[in-house]
Every structure is written in structure tokens, then in C-alpha cells.
Length: 428
Image 1 (cartoon, rainbow, N blue to C red):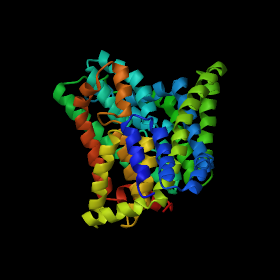
Image 2: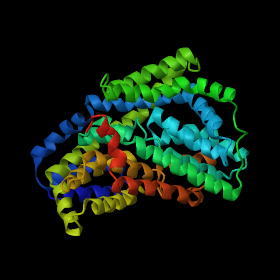
Image 3: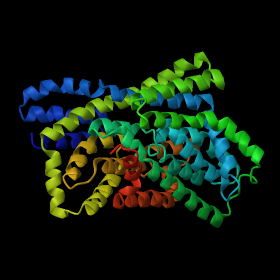
Image 4: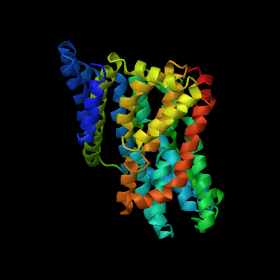
């Protein structure tokens, strides 16, 4: 069935069919058109097999850990600590937004969760402090991109599972790019704050105030250390680390901070189940789509097509970056990884591009797509929080998107930025 399944998928997308059904309809129609009924019978088995895997269990567990930490008030402690650290410089609350997102990234691994949790606290505070709604929303959306780059990351777990890349190596590869994005956003915010004379949040904190804020944030900040430390040392698998994160979040919420009651758990579990089922259904549908792409020879065909343009790996990566960014403007991160990973990954591997290097490039690209007009998911969240149109937020967002694009280009051209840490720790 050469590429008939792909055209069916595109037609379904153009007709507005939900992505999860479009992904399944492509292979189904493709096998029917090609009269390959044997493959057709294998679709349910492939779909179920794509979900019923131990590594995939990490996804609902990390979502549950993030929900527990949001409800328990841990986010507020991180915001207070970030404000104490950096609130005294120009555009202090905007800087706090960025630093808090970097801290929160180590807890949830979700850009949408970051936007909702940090934004609901800091956007009203920024408005009260004299910032415009659209600027507050733009800073929140731009900094939320860090969430899935600094580990743990839900999309990295999905990519690692689908493409058979070591998840620990991918987690470690995201550390430097994530910090680069954060530092770049801080510098741009300082420049904009100075030009617009945005206020400082407060005077420089005393040593006592710093210690008090750190003391309250210390236990939540241990979460990423527990997760990464357990994976890197080999004590736990990523899935077991996710379970450990849930257990730690439960202990903090119920017994240490005592901000979550047993009665709250039903709502937390319901929201976790709802979001997890959405992602897992996507994974199942994308599994059969990726299988159809593989047996149809799509990666090989793409490799031959790319070879007609150039055989330089760096130029190829830059070309693929452009394609990913354009696609990311319209497609959510998880479907983008599930659809494009099995196509681009093997094709670029033919040109000697390291699988972990391409993995981190793709994860950054699809995450930036979440904050890119016109369809970026976190733009819709930021818009709902501020009751401001996406087009208005987008005008304030362009300097921050320039930072994201710069990091993507640097990581593409200099693989050592992403690969040095995982290589040094023996994961590559």
C-alpha cells in the first residue's frame, strides 16, 4: 500500500477528524485499498501492544505526581523561592515566572501543566504589578516550553519508547538545552524590562529570607534529584522512578504539608485518568500508524528524497528543523512525536545522525510548537487565563520564540551541547 494510508490520514485531518481517529483510519483504509486483509487483522493486536508496555506506565504516574504537587501548593512554594532569588532585578516578577518554570520542569514534565500552575499564580500578580496582560501571558507561555525539556519529560518517555532510545540518555541530554532556554529568556526579559521600565518585585532578600524560602521549597526541589538520581545510578527504571515520584508526592501532600485531604484524591485520580487515557489512546493509534509507515518504506523513501537535496547531516538537520517547526504550529507535541519520529528518525540515522541527538532536537522542536501561533496548545491555556486573544499574545511572544529557535539551531549544529552529559555518565 505504497503511501495511500498517508493520504487518507491527511484527508481525515483536513476534514477535522480528531487526530486519534485519523491516525487509525490511515492504516485501516490503506490495508483495505491494498487488499492486505492479513495485516488488517493485526491492527487491534498492534494497537493494544503499543499501550500494554511497562515503560508506558511512567506516563500516567508522572501525570499523577504533577497533579498531586499542583493541588498540594508545592507550586506556590516554588514561586515564592524563585521570587526571593531573582525578584529584586528588573522585571522581577517576569524573571520569577521563568525561574519557577525551570524548577517546576523537574516536577511535572508537562508544558501545559506548567502554564496552568505557574500562570494561575503569577499572571494576576504581574497584572497587579503593572505588566500588561499580553506580556504576562507571553512570558508564561514562553517559559512553559522548558517543562518538557528539563527532565523528567512525558514526551521524552514517549519518544524513547516509540524509537527505542535510552530514556536516561534522553533525560540527561535535555539538561543543557533546558538551561540554555531558561538563561536566554531571562536575558531577553531583562532587556525588555529595562526598555519598558518594568518594576522590580521587591528589594534584595536578606540571608534569613532566602533561607526561609529555601527551607520551604527544599523538599519539593528534591523530586527531580530523586527521579534523575535513581535512573542515572541504575537503582530504578524510569517507570519505577515515576512510581517513586508519586509516592514522594503523596507523602509530602498528605503527611508533611498536609494540604491534600483523602477526599481530594478522587478528583486528582479522575483528572489523571482523563489525561492519561487521552495520551495512551494516541499512543495506541500512532503505533499502528508507525507500523504502517515502516512496512510501506516511508523512512527509506524520505531518506532518498533528502539525499537528493544534500548529504550534509547538519544541513539535513536544519531542514528537518524547519519542517518540524511548521508542523508543530498545527500539531500537538505527542501526536507530532508519534507520527514523525518513526519517519524522520530512521531516515536521518542513514546519514549518521545520532539517535539521541535527533531525539532531543525533535523534543525541543515539538515543545516550541506548543508556544507557536496559530495552534500552540499553551497559547490557548495562557489566553484563557488572561481572557486575551492569541494574536495579541503572539505579538509579545516573538522575542522569546527567537530564543527558542536559537537554542534549536545551536543544539543542531553542536551535538556536544546535548550529548556530553549522557556520554560522560556512560549512557551512550
